[in-house]
Amino acid sequence: MHSTTDEAMHGIVGNCDSLLQTKTIVGRYRSCDASVLILGESGTGKELVARAIHYISDRAEGPFVPVNCGALPDELLENELFGHEQGAFTGARGSVPGLIEQAEGGTLFLDEIGTLSLRGQCALLRFLQSKEFRRLGSRRLQSANVRVFAATNADLNDMVALGGFRQDLLYRLNILRIVLPPLRDRGNDIDLLAGHFIARFCRQYNMPDKQLSAAASQWLYAHDWPGNIRELENLLHRAILSCPGTVIQREDLTPDQDSSLTPSMPYTRLNMDLSFQDAKAEVISQFERHYLEALMNRCNGNVSQAARVAGKERRALGKLLKKYGLSR
Image 1 (cartoon, one colour):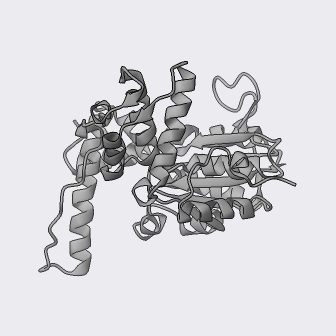
Image 2 (cartoon, helix red, strand yellow):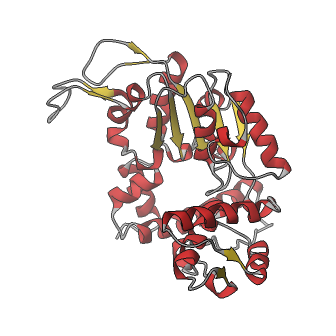
């Protein structure tokens, strides 16, 4: 019989009502093999929750294989998922198992599932329907004993409405669901998490115990935490290394102010003289242009890299860039 104590929760820290509910759900979801969709803003701990379910389940002795869907090149996606046989394509000198085979007997965690291209979604759907697959270059159908978790910070229902995500795939993934709260809504958990990270980093660097000053603690509660727990962890990591004494002062807390790392969407004033469809198309057009500009800046103009980050085929992304005059 597995324990559902905090120690068994694989590092999930917090006692707010919403997180206690999440811990209860984690304990409940461990005893079946149904797919789980984990939703929440970036940095809220979606992979941590997936690992917690895996390691208190009967699959704990099996592998936990995390996959960043945004990093899967579309042209190699089926090879990455299903593997290949020798001679399946130029350069395939041996048989190589895919990620699904690597997760045999355990859990496959598909992070950033909303970035998966439509082609990739189709391939994944076929596997989820039957739990069977073929390596590239093989005629042999293999079955997989794998549980699938998926996570995203995107609104998949909106993506379905806009044609960017398959509804049938959403049905397959969304059998069980967990929604994680943002850090700004977790009340006193900020203190618990801060103490957890400070203790961890002090141990890591063999430093004497440190604590937050009253002003530093007050600032933590006043901050909005757009990057959630990941941002808090990063900020305290920096503070531990830069703080000269044993008390972390307000001035030691220096959040990253480089707004170019997270470009914000400009406010769009709706034109109420337009029909619903035309107004919607105008907003989508403005979003596409802004997203593509930020994407190409991030990727230094490299279209192939941008296509991988956006989860789109290179040709499709090229057409969008040309549409908005961003191809150069």
